[in-house]
Image (cartoon, rainbow, N blue to C red):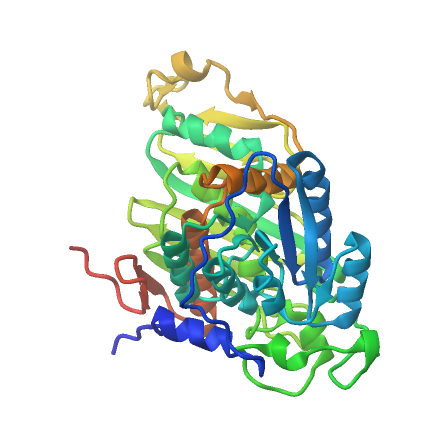
Length: 450
């Protein structure tokens, strides 16, 4: 029997998201248009989630705001110490309840940097309240939520930027143009990796032993709010401080790290695409601790247009493979060192050649290749050097004023999310899975083509 992974309707989802704590639910039916921001108006940003990433992103926004006329205006976290620290840094009010940020009429946009299972509920609630959203990657925790985010952006007209800053690098635009110009011919396969080997890289972040739901003062954690719609359980410091090791709150390698690979690939392809078939494997090979997610993980995704993506990763080995896209007529190497989040000053084009029956007879698959791209065995194209984090944040703030689509918009983000979330399901179920983009349903049986 075919297994379908259905989801609740949007209204039910929003009601459940609003009722995740004892505080009265928001009136999601009311849909404020949001303040019209003029060229000289200051943008007020609220931060929801002030852990390591949220604290970093807030500082980046504060820096960008000096040029873009924006400021951090309010901060929120379920851990009082983090609230206090960030409130002091930015000299703004702080709260334990994200709804106080959303209900503040002075807030124009929010940064959502919570654990993954809270991304969609807060982002959707924010857009329903007329706020624009900078949503940390992964954009959500489930395929159902990805669809709802797409629908909410369309319904509200809000700007949503997914916070995978690597997509603001110049190499992806250069690769996109080269592919469009015919440098690789028919696209066949994209490959990439994300490898690292460190205790910290394994999401084993420091644990504050004094903190918890029964603690008072700055050590207090609102554990019930933090759990949200995840399974109810007693406070677990490892789950709170190291949430990416657990399925309830994260997809591990796939959603934390592969998002930085899949999102820019979709930009390079020119047309963001949903996968048609996904399979994944791996395991906990080295780190035998409390974790549920694998320390080594690999995925293969097939696309209806006739190409594949192959990604590999291990948290116990730091050697990358080049990030590239292969075609019948040539290859584009976007990241020769393999580290998608690290700087590069070039991309490389390599033509494919025909090898004839006679030794030494070598022509080009695309006879026009040397005239269009050069006669060298490989052609390097310079990549603009820039601060991609400032570029990504600045792009979001600019789009808030122009109402244009940002660099990593919700549609592109959703296509990346579907691949990596399907890979998580494939790994956990031990099945090859198929996606029907018309219905947004995942199945273990091939989708019949119309």
